[in-house]
Length: 358
Image 1 (cartoon, rainbow, N blue to C red):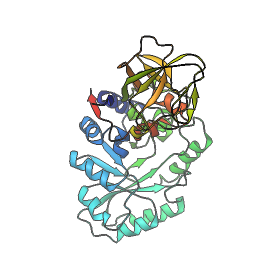
Image 2 (tube, rainbow, N blue to C red; image 1 turned 180 degrees about the horizontal axis):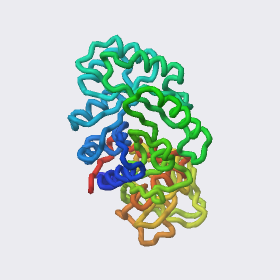
Image 3 (spheres, rainbow, N blue to C red; image 1 turned 90 degrees about the vertical axis):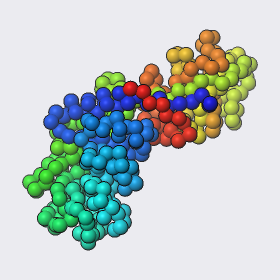
């Protein structure tokens, strides 16, 4: 078997969900499990959280149906709402909480014949300018949906643009715009994503929406997951499958992009961009070999990458390699690649076996 595995620590995910709750006592939380639980495996993550999570949040009806099949009772929030009129009856059959973020969705909802009314979350565009009603339109639709036969609860939701940049003035403005609508009669309210759960108490409404923090990565550039008390939940682990002695002046990999400045030992590792490791990772990106740091050497290939182990004489064929995880934060690797932990975790492909612990 090819020596590459994503080891998923379910106990770490439970710890991180509990941490979200400790940040905002008395609030409930939708565990965000879209995108296959950020690459961790939605079935296993939902099963692990089955007894503790107040609800789950997903991006599509297909994701919602998968979660409902595993959890018959939990509230499941459909974050982008329905995309076609035919989806509203299905959402009702599944018993979803439904985001309504524009007039077309609201009209389609009111035109639908449903088996039961839905919990509706009107989305306010408080400053992200991606989805949602402006304040005036939201007030109008609040009046039109209040008491409609298709609506059970009528709730309010919005999303931050810059909560991951601590002290950004837009965050305070978004909170204020959200609070200005609370004079309306809403049953439930939700505003806080991971960054706001951790650092913006004013955003702790009835429901939290922890996402990236569940998986042990930080939403912040200036605060590490460890400093926040988060535990990493995915370790991408491989092994060395070959070692080459490379003379000074010789190159390694496609495009001869890395040239040895000294006689070097180069290890080939069983992981590449087809597994989800970023192809654009530059030489020097950190990798752990035998628990010690070593730099990436040259371009990442489809199925392999090369590491300079010249300063690790104990390393050789079959030595363990950690691409990121329990001992090498995914956020540090992402930063070296000019990316974010979210992208690295969600891009680990299906051909990488997941092994679950905890």
